[in-house]
Image 1 (cartoon, rainbow, N blue to C red):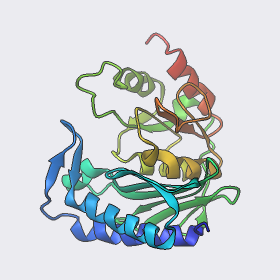
Image 2: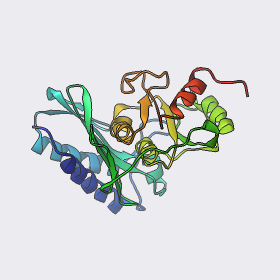
Image 3: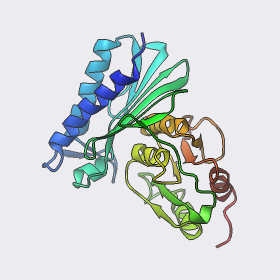
Length: 261
């Protein structure tokens, strides 16, 4: 048995209530890395989601950010990010989300990203388009890279790994109207789907960061690949490039063959 999109939306909204209730409070903060944080709210949200999924779909596999992989049938897999944007959340910055995706037969079929602060629920089912709070949305129609607004993020080892996206950031900043960094890859993708941004790229992510948002972008008319133009953006080593179809090729060329600037 597989879930309905409505069931996934309900789960995301319920987890979002946990995030909203804890927002702005003092938190128990632990460090997974120098700048990679986790709070007790991450764990509360994830425990709620895992409990609900196991109760309703006990045979399904789950890949969750904090607890890792849970065994189940090969056909059915959930990607669970209970709090995407933990650093923002811990600092009281109101940009974070819950991200849930359902995969069957190796293909992501449904995805939901919920922003509890703005009460924005982005959802998509393969072949049925993308909606924001029930209303259809689409990627932008911007044609030229120099008229585009982009968004990106940076890996947690930015201080120690020279492959840290800073060169790409500089190049795109000089070629576009601007590049933003919000701190939630799931929302970055949803904002591309809604036409708020024209493109998004990032390196060294995890599947739970992007599985839902990538489907949401695709169903809104966007193109999604890794930064080399290959279709499997969930495969390791993971990277992603999501944009409207007009500027995706131009972004890909910059990532492949950066110009001298």
